[in-house]
Figure 1: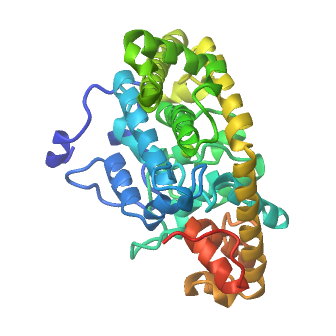
Figure 2 (figure 1 turned 180 degrees about the horizontal axis):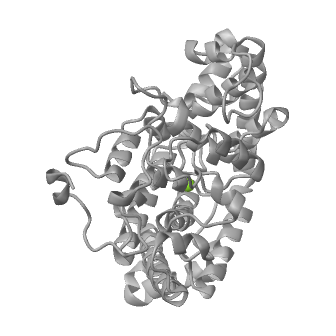
Length: 411
Ligand code: MG
């Protein structure tokens, strides 16, 4: 081990954790850093990337201009990292890897949240489709242009694996055809989807931390927006239980003026209980499966999980949020306009690629997109360009090119 490194390596990692000293490495080999492990270095590269800074102006549920205090993709990613790290520490998993994956997990999101992704996927239906998860990997593998020697951030296998949560068999085969550089011959990040194997526990943990984070913060944002109320949430057992608990411990929270404090206390209790639940259920699952290594983790069913009861309660909360918030007429209407912006931008840039920034315009002229770029270069580079936009840049571009103002632009 390099002398400076021993001071920063996390000690006491479980045998089934991802050890940065045992990483499968980067596609392009680089000398080790002297004061950071490879996973810390991945995290730092992500934090310094352009795509990461753009997350602050990308929608989670509410559009950026609708209010200053709603979550954005950036604050969401930070919350996922916080939850992930604290669970990782209890389970003796690699905190640095969890943080790197959490901070990168939404880098491929389009402007305007899921509406943007759905619209772009429809536009790309005949050209290989668009999927935000695959796009996150594409951002860190290809689209970031910062380093003289390579495209992308040249992250370790373990971080890249964690970023690619889902992948169709078709895309996994495309990916594998382009994966090279892993000297151990075990294939790349597409391989597990073809062999039906699981990713690392750190990657599994980020998935669950993502879900815990958005369920909780969407309650907060939903109430803040006035689209859902605390009273409505009484029908959701998971929330109601902690609301009752908060009231029992702090009677003054019954006063109408304390409603916001009551909501925060209920969410805080709910988050804590979910964290404790994941830790306990995962410990049980690991013990039962008797895994002793990452290789064994990959062969098992998912091991980072909620207890059956918490899983059911969390699903009820999710159903509530779908019905009452994500499908609320106000949200649906804004999202319909956002979809129109994305669809029209797509057609406009395909007709006039020179309207895009120079690098994308240039790439759109290539005969065929290379390696795992599905579809022709023109449509793929237009999709890359649109996907990278912030909400307000997309709105401004739409206004510049059409003269119409579908969405108010915040400055
Ligand atoms: Mg997320």
